[in-house]
Image (cartoon, rainbow, N blue to C red; front, side):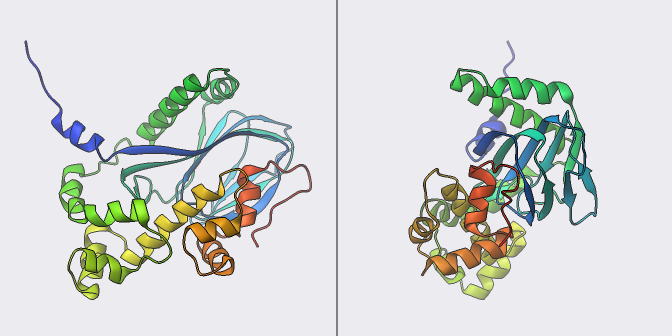
Length: 283
């Protein structure tokens, strides 16, 4: 008998995490805005009235992706994208992060949107969302997301072992930010945690992680804020207080700077499917 243990897979599994933050079947929806979110977005159009004019605008590449029945649309995290959606179209919307380490999504550097024709997957996903067994929905949606991500990442090799060696240096910092990071966290605080001067830490962290510690703090704070705002019934003020912003005003200013829309507009965009004419604006 031959046993080929994949120890590297087990090591990686301890860091790897899929977190889904939003799942909805959306209809009679209107939005005209541009924004960036801390999550990856997967939209699957299962019905439209054929009038056209509904597009997802890839602002970096200049592409306009027409929204049509039977197509999937992928928008990577922290990537500013334009949306022109009007009533008469229906789609499944899934938001998720796929982390190799907390705060480092595998699609962080995926700098374009995708439009993929797959009517069978779209229709089967729509049927799945009506399944009465929530455990089955959860398992199959996770299966769907993992399969979709595997197809997008095929050929984009990540030097996982090298990254694990590098990123283990910052386990204390990553753990702190995941559990306790809020608006009071600073680059100086992180540097002190591992006994380095601020300037040395900033250079080292940026070289190792591919992002400045200031931007990393902002990204992870946006992720927490976005997840909290998606809790039904939560107020912008309560999120600002929980994340230790000095005021609701400063939290709203921070959120709008990074997301491209105000927290209340973000909630309307994601928690409520507005009827015709109820269009959340980016301010």
